[in-house]
Image (cartoon, rainbow, N blue to C red):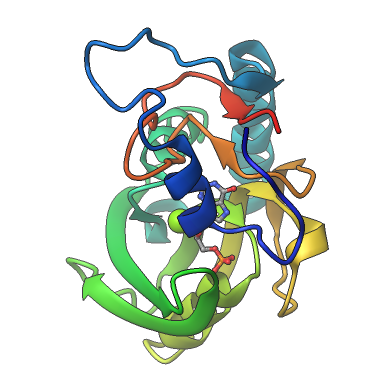
Length: 203
Ligand code: IMP
Ligand code: MG
């Protein structure tokens, strides 16, 4: 059984906890995660977000670029972009966040940069989750230096209890409790991104 408290909440702890439980291809799939947000709830909310973004960016045409943060946002990005009824382009950034292994430090490195300049374009960051907010904060600051027409943030999930730095989330899917969540792009030790729902490990 995994233990959990705000001070020990971390990817490293959950990764250690789940090792040996369901890491092999021979194990039962999906693993016994509790459902936090079902596939139906996700898809309904994403359709609504796409409609809202379509309305608000209407008239901006080709200048919209969705910037997905690898790898967690990939499933969300794929579904969201199909609900945005505007010409747009897709680009991706790879980010590595360094900490003490237990906690994000806010020291962020770009491991893979955008393939095209965003100068003069409307950039919309697409994230899986805003946890401490440190990654999104770094991204905002970094992208602003590239002279885009605007930078906004769309995140599927937000864990408000964990917030360390205030970041404006312009489009939000769901607020989630202070639990380590998995599925629909989010991983534990790189696994389970391919679940269609958001689950959590029961403590
Ligand atoms: P930050 O703490 O807001 O900088 O979040 C950094 C990154 O940690 C997120 O983009 C996710 O990729 C990952 N992350 C944060 N919380 C969770 C979680 O509950 N499950 C899986 N990944 C998470
Ligand atoms: Mg992420």
